[in-house]
Length: 113
Length: 112
Image 1: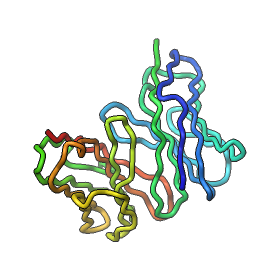
Image 2: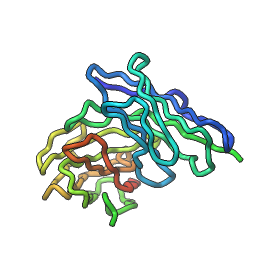
Image 3: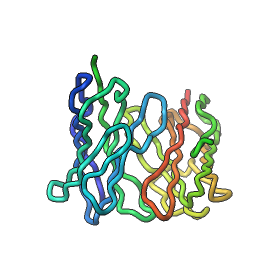
Image 4: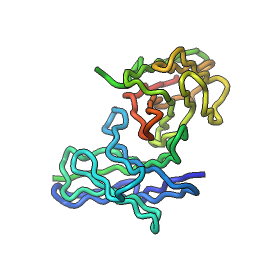
């Protein structure tokens, strides 16, 4: 079975500071990994994905994540936070094909002026 | 030109009633899903259909019945609604050639 652990239900940063949201996964097969963002009262929007190939993946809004197999991690980063980045972020894993997405419990990012 | 749409956006109803939520995607995807997000924001798969065929059926009460009239639509019917059914229900779709899923805006169901 696959699982995702997101460390920290809340992360607070100042505007302009580095954003680091942590995600560790467990999977017995090569994983496909995703980060989604959910703004209040909205659906989930795909930020970025890792399937195969380059382990550093870039997404929308200046976010990127690095797949580290040895650490079973897929942490999300952004060099400089904007107020508009305040939202809930979900890490998810699947084994591909018709398999379901397994989500982490989410991390709420708070950005202060 | 909404990719994945759901209706209604909000649904308030009383215990014991039957209700339906509709989902449509115009992305040409072959697979569609229903997820439930509880009050703590936890997201869990309920069902998945591929080309109108049920492929994932998690341990969901029989009161929940999905129906896919064609590969662009996946509806969710809920019988005898209970307080614990209150949640946000998300529809999603994905192509057979890829693994990412695209989500609808959600339907907030409140059972009183």
